Image 1 (tube, helix red, strand yellow):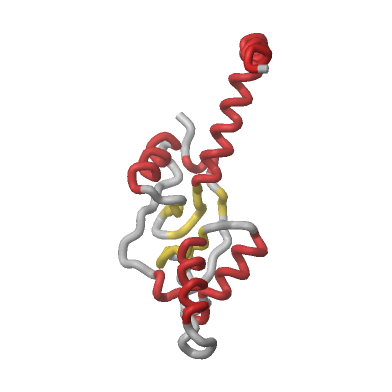
Image 2 (image 1 turned 180 degrees about the vertical axis):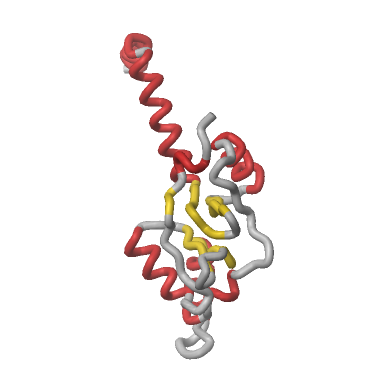
Length: 152
């Protein structure tokens, strides 16, 4: 059984609740990521900010004048939540994928001993699917080549 630990991104990029939505946007843009866990000084998960949150704040900021009311300057503390969906590093990949699909979420922070140790995202599962498809293609090259010829 493959586990979350084997496919997660260890030590994910994080921000604190004191950072702003603008800080999160800049970090997402520079690192090409879509989810940033919000953690305390002791690396306990407090929340998560997503690309959707950034887009919502940006559309709100277009409607408001710049200044103290700019949603992009709001602290990430507004994204902290008392309970979040998380997963253990020892959980099966299948159960994590099913959970994400059932709850329509794009990532699961990986928690061990109350601390953030990783993150697994929908992009990780796409990479897994691509690898499995490549393995299948290597195992059955003749059938695929014949199917491609028939489609041409």
